[in-house]
Image (cartoon, rainbow, N blue to C red; front, side, top):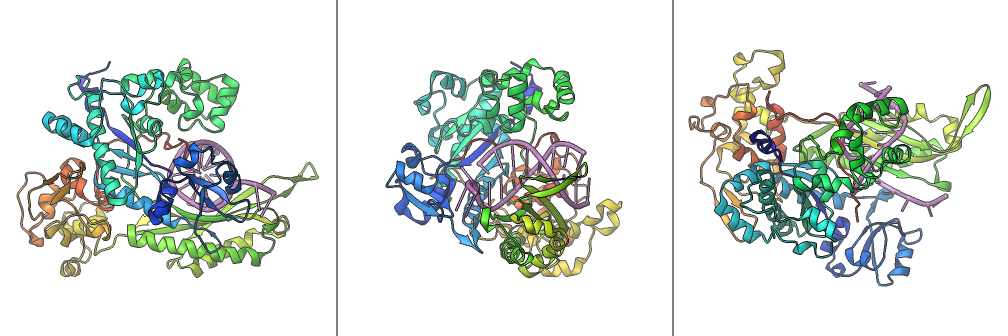
Length: 599
DNA sequence: AATCGGCACACT
DNA sequence: AAGTGTGCC
């Protein structure tokens, strides 16, 4: 038990949230007839009833499986309701689910220190500071514990689990009075997570499951242990035991070829078995046998000990946007015209989604990538023509057009594709087309960007280096006159958050809705200026813009956390990116932490 | 012809 | 820096 003050100071409360059979929930919200009956969401119902991509728990209970097609499902469960994913431009269109997911994670972001969306229906939250605060007020903790309905120190929500699981996932060590600071942090976190889940249910109608632990890897590991609509805590004291019997493939990152190789060639069964190998051995193994790449060694040696230092980022918007379609067998595309026809269609969707990204997140793409699969390819080897079967995939990129509408995207894409698709490809046929936009950058909109705010308050003469140039005043008078954007937000009273409004226009701080449902805590009604918003206990400055002055070296420590937390996530991101130094250190090694089964 | 379409990221 | 491959949902 490493309870040095340093270790406990650093202990985090990290949460993985995962929406329960999400596509089904979305369809049920639109059509309540589907509630409480077995149902599945399928795409492309032309062939054998379509492919199942989401299943209700009722359907699962009846033996329907994800690998089945709609028709198979009907055999097992004749009364199953099948809902087809909407199509647009002759392809499946997931917009409905993406937007529903956004609504959920906006709520999560509002109620947690950090929210990082990792897929259409999953996110990580960091609620360390909130949990610490709650822990420091035991009366408050106990009160909210009662209201939250979380049962700490019981095993009642694990009734179906075997003894091993009870032992591992739920132990009476999670008591408010527990002297293990690390685990009490999780106990406090559990209350907060229950409140967040209640808020999500209240605001959106959706239920989710959550895993609560000290890092991303562990919280993800347990988020699905109790589903649907339940949360699971993994105490630090149980990690070793859990990993010792956890099948290797079940840990994030080991589910693919890497896991297979380790199992086959090193006869590793459980995650804990990896501990037998020193870091050096792992590295040597990596070099010698090419089982793993050298840089995976550190990550592996930490992972098998339950260590994961990767921080939770603050991001709800996607980093790239892409859409594609496969053309199997006879439908494969066999002419340039045919390819263009579908590039046109894909471009329509991509253009729409880019438009949305700009409006919603002020993101603009810099790069367009097109990729395609072609069925076969002939290669010359030792003078012989060899026909390689199996899919060859290629991708090419180009600059994203300044006005990324469907026509311009299609034009740009076809320009690179025409060079690429030689007669051989056309003869073999194109089996998959995929276009995407990446290098999404934040538009520094003068009217709304927080950098404008900084520009206005940092006098040009105070800037000292080239790298600070984005903080300079550019058009101060013009910007001052407008007073429409964020600057205005900070000089008017803050209003409660309303999810339907544009996120960068709304700010919840004056009123904070407590997550237990009924209880509303009022925060003091002030008229925050940028100055007292960001700086604790400094001069309560005036609303007059000219008098506001911020040093251009804004650091993390100067940011008032309680205020920062209330900002829309987009603005949090901007603040973060404006901060010059002293950001919490972030791990750079492995960045992927998703793997658990989906409905 | 039959697990689609989709993200993120490591590596080179 | 662009392109390929892996892993996960």
